[in-house]
Amino acid sequence: MVDPKEYLKFGQQFHGHKCPAMPLGLRVGAAAMNKLGVERAKDSQLVAILELGDNHCATCFADGVQVITGCTLGKGNVQKLHYGKWGVTLVEAKTGRAVRVAPIGEVQAQTKKTDFFINYRMKGIPASEVPDEVVEPLIDEVMNAPDDKLLTISEVFHYDLPAQASSHLRRVHLRRVRRHGCGGLRPSHGRQEGLPGLLQQGPRGRQDLKIKIIPHC
Ligand SMILES: [Zn+2]
Image (cartoon, rainbow, N blue to C red; front, side, top):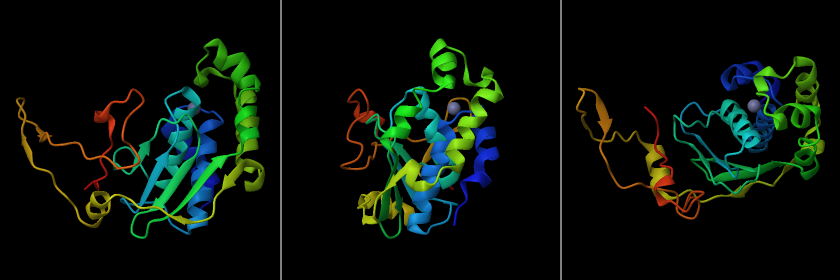
């Protein structure tokens, strides 16, 4: 079983400040992993599909998911759908077993009614400048609430990752590189490979925002 409390300190260091949304991402990620019975992805064993967009809270939430699942921007096994929702679908790459987890509606609504949000964040005060006595009780609430008071957790279902994603996950695919003008290396330009049915377009309908799923090496 994955214990999200074991990742709180690391998550806060990675994220940069204390807030309730990053820990909520830890809880969501842990619940998904425990439902699937999987460990943190050392490579690309898991794929996390985030439904959120780019607002502040959602961004914090995504960092918690990355920290606990090991699905990271660097490894390319996390993607955002820009639906503006906090749901996360976690997929075990080799089997396609998947689960969707989201904070319950009331929890999402409560985040907008807190002192932290109304008297600090809404007034433009950076989260890093919010006093500990304001934010830490919120973090404690998130970290200690029972799953059924905090989250909706789906049954396990099958999720078809696109063929190119699963084949990439079975082997290390080194892309051709070429010399950059400064003497460094950069990936060669190639066709963007997205996830059919998932990321057909970004927030502004831009096809070039598709995310490529290949293993890091
Ligand atoms: Zn945050």
